[in-house]
Length: 447
Image (cartoon, rainbow, N blue to C red; front, side, top):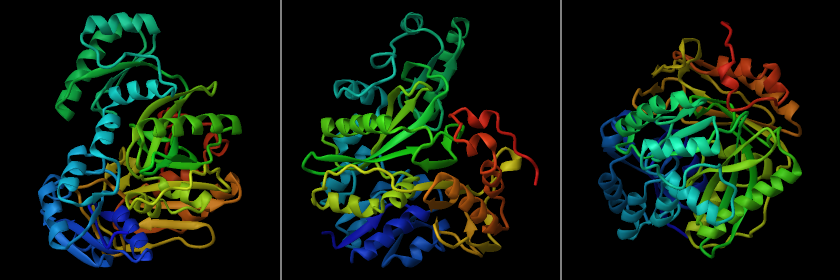
């Protein structure tokens, strides 16, 4: 087992990793930018090293500074959390070259699954259902037009290096294809330095359902059931739950087997997520694989009583997994609390928190790094907390969430708490009747 782990991240996920490390008797090193010197992950780590100024490119994405911090503190492993360098193959490779264990998959694995076109081809070979579309990248507009005619409209153009909805265009009729092709490539080139495009059949009334997986160094893999992440705004998840209200035992078995097949085919090591789009007829299609821990991992932990961070660390240390697949024994919902103004187009709201009161009680979990007096910096993702409720049934989990949101007081900045309060009362959400298009018709009422 490792003696000391450096957490190459910030905020609530860094604190989350520190807590499990301490429970395992492992020393921790926090890294921080000058903007984060007062964050709780800095306070509760055994050691802390400043790695640069506020901008992420100068600190949390600064590989030489992070490696130097690991070397001067004698850390023998690095946990990347999510975001930042968590799916950066070069970072994984440099860790290995410096005899530091990267707690995650190999650089080759990240490369293989990080590029969406390559990942799709790999999953086809593994026998995992994929969305009809291009075989790899599109070479020209003429090829794009011909393929769209073959698979039938509507189609979706996607940037191979995409993320956060950039470089994506839905095309409903042939007359709109040329304009969508040009604008998607231009946006992708500007955002990612790569304008490579591929195309898929557009799945109507889709749900975004992901399967949590864990694989060990011996090629064994298991799944830990599903999470429904369909409530999204601009392709950013707002709330997640498990089990999915759309799920059946048959569909869970089929999706679970496909996810495990994906892992064993590529000999995946670590915790990861195989993400699927599921249509209204319960046909499911591989979308992508995230080769890291997910923001929404706590709901899985709650319904099967399983510490995913602990398992990541054990797998990285060479300890084999049991190989057992899991089904949810309870129901859990997560609301992402962002420092944003939901009444002003979710505009970011950095600043000083003047009042902070956390909800409590049976079945309530709060993952956060903020407190009264904490100043939310404007440089990073706006998520400041994850509120999780767990109960015997979905109805009880929703009722708990309503009560917890009413108790949750954050003053000094705007937050998405009012949005979540209204979401938990929305008839379609309460009925479990939602897709990835849900937010397009959601109307927020002034409180």
